[in-house]
Image (tube, rainbow, N blue to C red; front, side, top):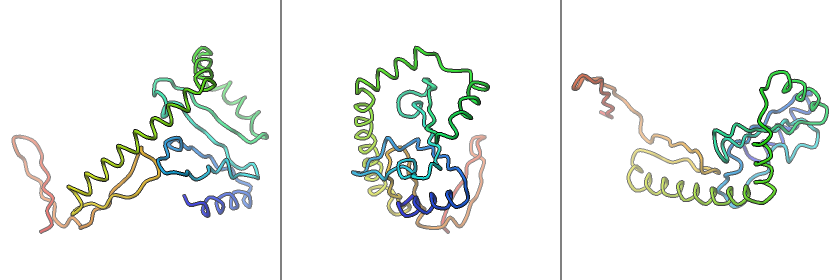
Length: 173
């Protein structure tokens, strides 16, 4: 989302007395030089609830996440989490806190940014070299996801059974 659209969304939330839940799951892995600020960073009115998970950035089985809530909502989240969340073992929280405090998380994120940038560049090169006739790869700010547009429409679709398996033949004629 562009910076202008981010400001417009924040203004709309303020005008409507609404909350915005920002799940910035890929923000740590921005592969551009200067990532755009999060909505939470731009939020002067206390309208953004920022949620994150270390499952995407470190290890899926870790199952640790966090919520940065505006002060008026903190008691609500505390009560809700106490009532419905099974909790996370304190030893995992302690290890993660030390991992962050000692700078290992920042090092990991920098290393992953480089790796994902390399992988995206390899994908872009492969699409440009081998699939440019059919696909246009959309630029991305993160190295975790992208999409491509088909350059030509698919006009015909024929289904055939080959060796007991259903095969789909896409052709442009």
